[in-house]
Image (cartoon, rainbow, N blue to C red; front, side, top):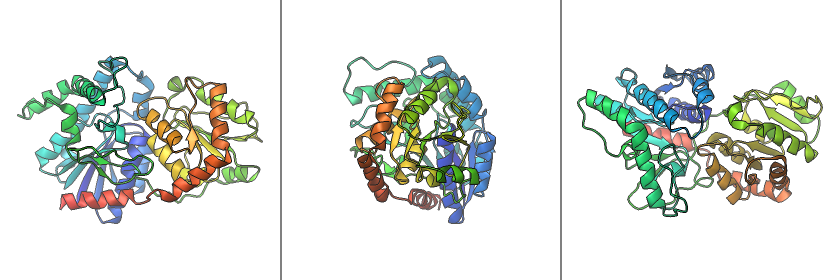
Length: 402
């Protein structure tokens, strides 16, 4: 049995597929992962015995030049991503199933249908998928009318925006394959039975009549690496520090947020653990005694050792922190991050700064996260989360492929 997994985006779009690949490999399947050619992604894919299929520019290159909310940039990138997905035909030719996720997966369904194998679309959080119970995330294109509260209207506008971004390039490629045009690009990508790879406690799907969503649980990659000796020494040298890291967010998006967060942590009398991430953060106001900078490491092991986790609100970081029983401060920047900030606050396992992140707003959020009752709720949540999402999805995918 051979499976092709396809994604494009930052680490948060790649690592869940690697977690799924690890579960598929444990069940005896061969796995190929079509993903950006960043060295860290290639190494991650190969670490679980899967075969990387490099596609498109590196995610770091794309992230560095993208301006959030830019309509022209979104259309240009969408055209590139559609072409990339159609370019998977050779990689899929001897596979038994294709699963796609990440940015702009238009074209993956056509590849699966041309090869004659099952196709699955997967989302990593509920608000990617249409439901009258929630609004879509804003996309570049036609803006939502001010004051509009009917979610069905907002989802109709979202469909228009997806068509505007991806409809042209998708239908050009379909015409070259002798296929008729698609009118509803979003519905075509998602299908009427998408998968939701998110924990049902942390991110529940609101049941929506007529839309059959399969919620598998989050896909996480097992990590048994020990923490580096120097990091262990720092953790042992005093009270648990506060972790500050913003994952794949580049410097031009953060705009000083990391520095403000570090100052707010210190104002609480706490030591500081800084994750370098794609912004290449380092020691802030260097003090070897109260600040330590760390690179890529096992977050599940680390988050269980810190007083709180201050982060951007990526799906993977939010889920890992929740599973570790850590209190969180979510500082959302783009995309799905406001959703995760809202969920953390609603569950009472952390807080998010009000308005633009400042020293004052971050200080208030960190104070909430450090409260004993917040930590108690976070630990209780961790006990309720399911650990087997990747295995559930792997079995379902192999059943489809048979």
